[in-house]
Image (cartoon, rainbow, N blue to C red):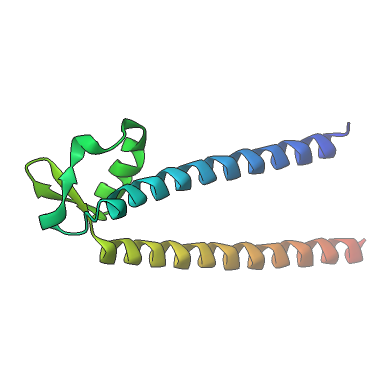
Length: 121
């Protein structure tokens, strides 16, 4: 296999691994949100005990607590702030769109540069 083919295969494998990791992380985040919505823990008055959360969901719990989506209601009880969650999702959508636009612009620049190099020969 040529160096270029090996590099392409390696890149494809890395992309697949990253996609799988991203999907697993999102699945955990969704499970945590479902836990809170399933218990109607959407306000300080309806907060749930922190120890009722599956330890496997502690990574997304930390992420959402750090971003203000999961809030402390006192007495080791937590609740989901839907407004903050909506804002976080909107921000992620904007960021993703901006990254996509940037990648597309860079791709056009690279292709244009390659065409100019070929024509200059």
